[in-house]
Length: 150
Image (cartoon, rainbow, N blue to C red; front, side):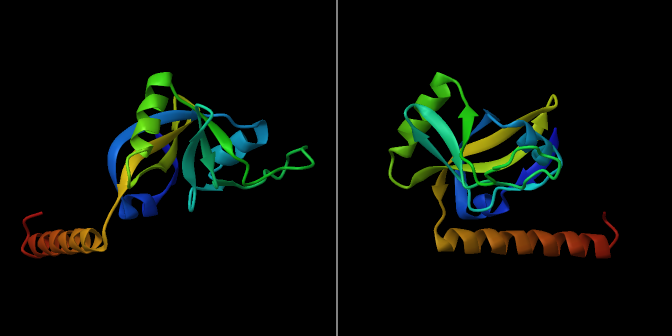
């Protein structure tokens, strides 16, 4: 699985409840740009309207060799999900405090896929405790390495 882009801020700001893998409807030049890692998931989100899921706010840089005159770099992209997944996501979003966030774009059998998650926002004290826990783990690893255990 080749990772093309990751939304690190999503994992920092949200606690994932369930994860889904969705296909993306892309134009030809967008596929080339995505495979060339010329994209960003920063500030992007997923919405559901008319029983379809859409990726909004993702930036795909214009491919230099594209013949298309008007390329929209921030075009909304449709996500390919099953009906069951769409029902689960739409019912999950109706619960207060839950949203759908894109986590990463990767290649699966040479097909561009988007990993999304139904997520709940973290509180400030959750973020602080997570950072404290990571610092403690880092110190333990540093001490073990210093004393020759790993």
